[in-house]
Structure formats: C-alpha cells, structure tokens
Amino acid sequence: PFGELGITIDEVVHITGLPVEGRAVTGSLDGSRGIGVEDVYKLLEDCLGVDRPTARQVLAGDKKSRFEWLRSQFEGSKEADSEERKMHCAIAYLLYTIGSLVCCDKSGNEVSVHFLQCLKNLNEVGSYSWATACLSWLLRNLAVTTRSDVHQMTGCMTLLQVYSKNFFDTVVL
Image (cartoon, rainbow, N blue to C red; front, side, top):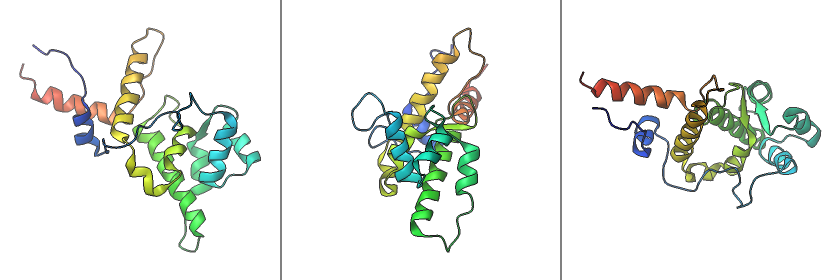
C-alpha cells in the first residue's frame, strides 16, 4: 500500500526553504574534474583571508575545514571590524551552515572547502540551487549508508526527519 518512498525536490524546497532555481553546486564550478590543493589554498586566501602557511595547517591535505577552527577564527564579528573582515566572517558563517545543516558529513565537525567556490561573491550565493545540492547530497549518502560496512548516516537529517514525519502522518493504517 505504500509504493516507493522518495523525497522530491519540491518537498526539499517546502521543508528547507532553500532555492531550487539557479546554478549547480558542484565540486568544481569551472568545469574541471575537481579542485586541487593549490586551488583550495587560494580559495581560503580569497574567501577567508587565510595566509598560505595557515591554510596548509588548517587543511592538513584533506580539503576540509574543521568547525572548531572556523569558530575560533571568525566568531564574534564586531561593528568596528573592517569590511573585509566582516565579509570573511559572513563567508565563514555560510560555510559552517552548509557543513552543519545542508551538506553534512559523517565527521560532524568538518566541511569541504570546495563550497567556498559558491561563496566567493556574497551577492551570488542565492544564485545557486542549494535545494538540489541538499537533496543530491542526502540521496548519495543514503545510498552509501545501504552498504553493510557503513554504520552511520549523513546528509541533511533534518530534511529526512521532517519528510518522514510528514509522510507517516498521512499514512492510514
């Protein structure tokens, strides 16, 4: 009586409020197959004002930033801060939000810095299809979770929980 259960993009938009119209959020926005470590260092420099030696320490080669580091470096922006510092804090906050709510990973304390490509220009952040990114991230990670050697789920669990509650509330047993 249940049929196939699947979250649609319309449900993602309804539940999260994320935009569906816009450019794709991918691992590489310039059409190449991915971003290299040097590109990641450049992103950290441009988007967060991090110098190259600090970027090397922060990433330790895995192209992810730890939430603890983001909080310690960018928490508490003040009115007297320069416009550049305020921009860096805003980008760090958005990166933190993406990594903790929209496209979570199993570590629970890291975010892939490739998302900085979408945050470089704060005026263009809303021009990306974040709902599609959220759904594809969740579905990919749910597919990985079906393997017998995987013991944790990841992705936007809030989306999955709200969707599941809404679905099962409508089922008449």
